[in-house]
Length: 304
Length: 136
Image 1 (tube, rainbow over the protein chains, first blue to last red):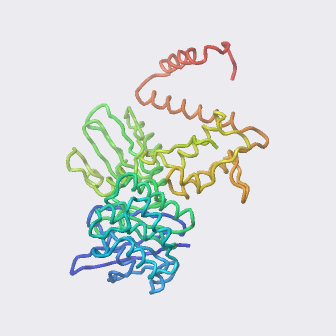
Image 2 (cartoon, helix red, strand yellow):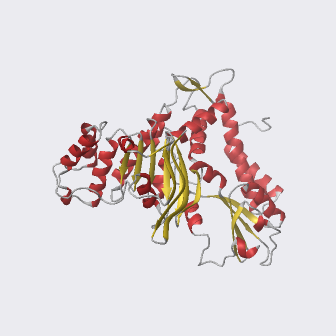
């Protein structure tokens, strides 16, 4: 059962699509990480999910149903931009949440604020960027929500508090709730998320289970005896996503079958063959920059 | 269970495989003994700060490989039935490590005789206390 299902979402501002046919599926009791460069469409997607922006087309379902006013009792949202009222104290924000949301636990919010080191008597205007994030996060996690939508929930926080937010996210998943969050800190997504999608220019350019992506995506590297070596069709193998030739060194980004492709390179006379693991940051960077401008590279399209 | 598990989420090795590898290693080393209870999925996820489904996947795989068993409502335990898992797991870890080393030796262009010489020397160094001709 998917907790959140987005199908073919499109949001056009003027003539520019901010989100351009984006789909995702967040199973219940799971954590989904949304990655992408600035301007990829992550925040617009979140806004559409919360009804803060009207989709141009497409569908967003929670447990199979569209967003209705009552849904907001079940969904907690941490926006990317600070939405605190400058003249109100932190305590007053807690009180405001208590009035708005039935399941909100003020004591839990205060406990979290104290863990983040936020003085609840301070006005929002006196808080640093990180402390503002902490207030929004504390209020969201005190909501007892079944679905949490978190847009950059660690923004401005120090490493200790960033780790604390990750623990909170993991704890929600362990309780059976669903979390979707975005972060520029890929290492955080790598820890906390089971599944990810990489967005670029409004589209999902890569998605899957983090551990499966790591298990399948490898760099296969080999060294050939001289510069003019034949690839014998390897570049056209659908599992080869990218071909980098730097003089006698061939590096292939493969999406599956690394060992088999390594054996083929060996058959073509390559030596020093290595199969290299990729972490999520590598996988992300390869996904968003299919061509590397600095190296002597032949991309798949050009070499085939 | 002693806190022996650590994972490096920034590594290219899937986290669930890291957990599997470390549980096996702990068993091979006798840190985890037959019948001993593993932390719950939730507890290990929180301790390691990793996704609970990832931990659950590792446990499922360990169960499938008959390394651990899960009793509903009681938790997961290192298996004790018919055979102690530890010699089998130790053999598996040793074999994987040697396979990797041989593959690397081949990749850098060493020949069979060179590898055999290195292997014999290393064997003498690390296993000198064992009688020669010790059959496997």
